[in-house]
Amino acid sequence: MSVFARTHLPLIIFVVCTFWVFFEFFIPIPGGPAITSMLGKWVSAVSNFALLLGALNILRFHGRNIVQRRENEWLHGIIIIASMFTMFIAGLAFKPYFKLLYDNIYMGLNTALMCYVGFYFYSAMYRTFKVRSLEALITLFACISMLLSNAPISGAIWGPLPQIGIWIANVPGMGAWRGFIMSAALGMFAMAIRAALGLERAYLGGSE
Amino acid sequence: MSTLEKIDKLDRRYIFLGLLVLSFLPVLMPMGLPVPIGPATTGSYEALDALNPGDIICMTFDYAGGSAAELYPQNVVILKHALKKDLRVVVVAFSVGGPEMGEMALEESGYKTAKAKGVDYVNLGFISGFETAMSSYAKDVHAIVSTDFFGTPLSQIPLMNEVRDIESFKYLAFTTSTSQDHYIRQFTGKSTKIVGCIQSLYFSVMQVYMGTGQLVGFLNGLRGSAEYEILTNELGVGAITMDQASITHLYGVGLLIIGNIAFFLKGRKSGGS
Image 1 (cartoon, rainbow over the protein chains, first blue to last red):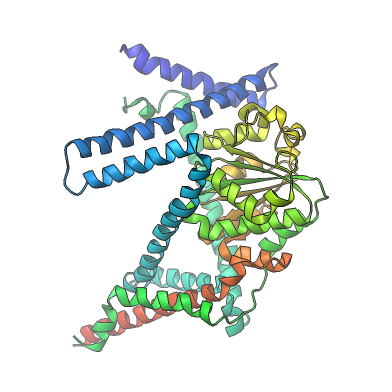
Image 2: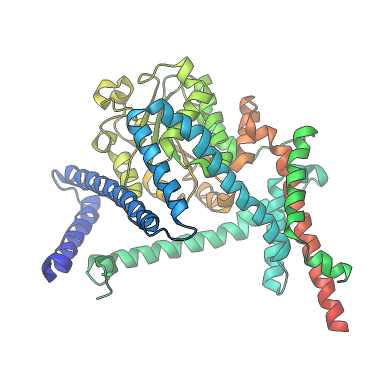
């Protein structure tokens, strides 16, 4: 593939689309919204291809593990590929079975996995959250206050107790988040300008 | 090994066991603790309650089974409230697992049995492209969606004849297990009242957006759904699990305090010897 097709063409498409969407937002152009809407549809279509690519990647990765009989992995590979095809076929041709599998197996397994993580949160609270500095002490205080503000029992223990956590969330927490959101937005804006000017090319597959 | 060291290095299986026992205890012996209702939930409730019968609302379902424990009861109670108010609902998902969650919530809330599909409710299914898709959806729903979740063309769905863009909805509740910024960027600033259904993890972030007035309210995890259930008098999973939440949160606080006391005393002992 030529350098033009590999690097310049995607860059031109990116820059033209970025500037079009940006200026169309601020300047009324006849027929502009229809073109922007079409671009949005294209993004949606490309994202669908990304999903297909993900499915193909699963097949390639786990298929290789199965063919090579990799220890501790090939059996998992069979389960993953079989599950994927079962859901795929059920979703396409047997909707009631898809719903049955989704509600009774997928949901249960997914919830169990999340609950499993919850147990480790509690273990981490006890074993790793140790006060070794002033910052850690402040974090611990904020953490306990937030836990108590979220537990209905805390108000029954002492009326103003939940208010401490709410104050932390509303005053220092909100201030910190506002700063974080604004700096992240400015960073994103700077990044978008760099990309639109062709200075950011990591998405082309390299830093050059 | 001294008692202090034993406490400091407590086997995590005991911590797991404690959590397991404390999770079941309130189910066997409910305490019925009062649940104070916060302004975020009240705002969400009042915005929906102020709507007129026949108004159209939208609900996004952007999560799957893993986050369902916290988010699904919120969706169900909002839909139950909407059903009571005789509102029409458009369900949409920007995450792959969402449409099924939407179907489940429509069924459990009673929409599927009490209302007509396509007339009073519709599930538009999954739209890929995440934030770009949200942007397109907000500008022109028909430009980005051509059929509903079951393949029916939008032109054959009476409800969709009244939906053009986001301002066709009087109220939009987004439900997400990840970042909320995309919804804020694409959906706020219009006439539609926006409510967030989130996991407790994002409580502080949502406070920011409520402070700026971009959100009329939000539901904070299971606690949020419990508060909403109390307001609507539709007690469900949220309210039932509040005793559990109280006990397990106190357990967490206890673990933090005991762990740190043991750590502090052990440090003093080893420093002093």
